[in-house]
Image 1 (cartoon, one colour):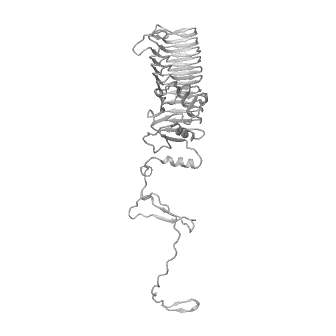
Image 2 (image 1 turned 90 degrees about the vertical axis):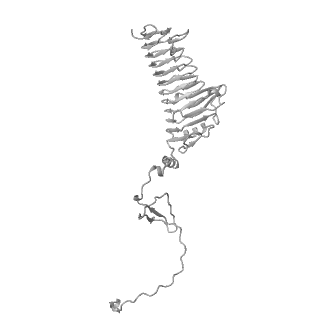
Image 3 (image 1 turned 90 degrees about the horizontal axis):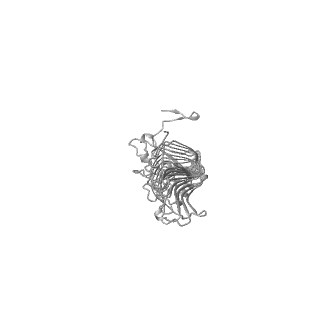
Length: 414
């Protein structure tokens, strides 16, 4: 075949190619590519993966991206997050960007599952780790979750304020501390207290505090000197609450409230000095169980209180004692085993109704200076519908007491 060539020339048919020349010398070794391979799936036979050089990556350190098609299969949570640590990614990002996580988890030395905890206690001086966790929360508050186990509190690195040792001092508003129920125990260590000093497992100096679902043990048998309180909330801790907690063995009292708007509910308080002390606040106390305390079950001095639907049994002094209070509502409480059921002194404009008061569970026999209902120096009280077998209402130096009474059985409209 003849073909026309450029410039009008003519060339003949092309002959067969000649033999290949010898192999040239090997070139220099190129740069090592930057390749990152994480956990990948096994692809079934015949499946294809892709690789491409990332646009803009330099020749001196090229970056290659590998892709595996979705048809290779998706991993479920049990595969890629067997320890349920996905939240840690967001916590890490928050910390790295200067933000504080709103929820942190703390483990005791004997917690069963410590892997998910952000902070771990050693079993000695645990208040230091707990303080670090609490103070890591954002300035507007957050939540500390305490895993199961026993957290031991002492005065290590705690500077006394006067004679007060505030082992866990809450200064951030809107802090919630929540345990796993009765299996989460904050316990005062042995031999911590000393004569003339006071010790507070929690002292709350900020509003909106929430304490839930844990046990506070003042360990009175091994701290016989000094005064121990489980929770102390002065006036700065307004709108705080304690719920679902067990508080025991605190030599002075279980909970001491001085802050308005406080709510105490569904707690069990036992073997303390006084169960609850209410000092000059407006508060709501309901559905608590207070038993076997050596002093008062509920002691109120000043303020206005709504005390209802509580179970008070076998406490050493009065079940409910209110002094210089006003506008109290005391109703639907069950009181048995106290030498005095309900006692008010210098109180005014209070409503006492529908309470059940009995000296002993199986006896209506009162001794001298023992009373079902006792009012002293009170004025403008309404007393109605109380079940008080064994002893009638007793009043001393009172005025304007509205009461309906029939014998020593029912305080009713008769």
